[in-house]
Length: 365
Ligand code: APR
Ligand code: ZN
Figure 1: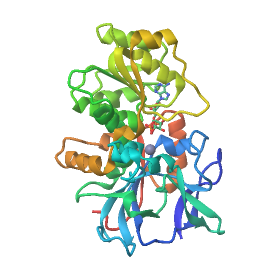
Figure 2 (figure 1 turned 90 degrees about the horizontal axis):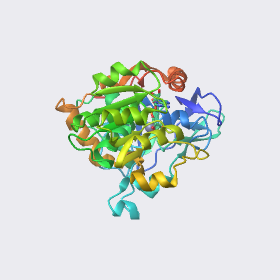
Figure 3 (figure 1 turned 135 degrees about the vertical axis):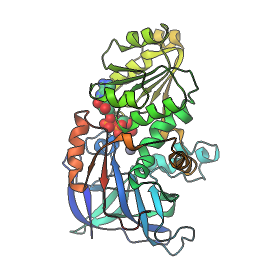
Figure 4 (figure 1 turned 180 degrees about the horizontal axis):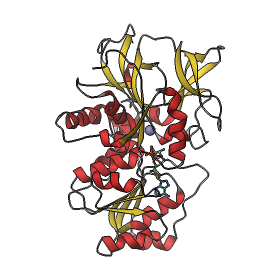
């Protein structure tokens, strides 16, 4: 039995309980968790925005160490440090074969997978086939990306979701170029990753937007040239910062209809708006037919930052190793499993940056 944070049903407060791990299959790995980031999508699984099967072990952004290897796995050993990969492409579906592994059919269907049991024998599910808010988990071999030595467990965890999604949105989806203007709405782990990527791409101006004024210092330290508090008149203010045009690229990293609309309206004629945030099924974004024609903008959903984790995580590791990418400033709080509900409270209030859950994993190099 291991300790895990389980959501028993929608709209209920998740609880730390003892759970029985899934049986290790021939193609599986047992992972001892080292660190796990608390992502808004974890909260979204408890409030009806995203609908996993319940009861479910939450958590999907994590690093760990291989504790046990299934009999059919021959390319990874006990002791190897890994990033857990909730978006592992199958490499066989139409999307994978046509160079869009982030749209993989298997990933699309995997909100949760059956795995493990509660103490009373009730079958359990793992969020995004990972279930990272637990001392240990069991995942398929393809559910991890091996890490080179020397990457700290906390930043390794962030690579599993915030960086793939936020950094990828700027680098892969938008392919932001030097000198292009960018606006980023929502400065949580995802938006801040996008901000770091925009700075590294040489973008400017980089306008960072949040409802929380306390985010200004972090945003500026990470490369924002301007910080604005969210309100409906932002498009006008942003045009004032961009020679009256609007930005080349707007990134919505909140997941709400009003911020999507405002981000879209902040892009220049012919500019692009990327919806990185995950909104609710029952909330619509309304755009006037005339505006849609007149502004000739692109409005694009942005799944996993158009990332291929097997390609991009090693690249981020090299950038961390060479000192060009520093993810530590994205982490504001550290806690144990019992502190995750407090991290959710901070998230509801728009406070703090990434909270990282730290485990006593032995052997993480
Ligand atoms: N305008 C601007 N910022 C806002 C607004 C708003 N109207 N409402 C909330 N925010 C800010 C919050 O203050 C917070 O700083 O958005 C940020 C969201 O941060 P997190 O809750 O940490 O979310 P994060 O994990 O970054 O995820 C962002 O991407 O992957 C999706 O499901 C995820 O939809 C979520 C989004
Ligand atoms: Zn996430």
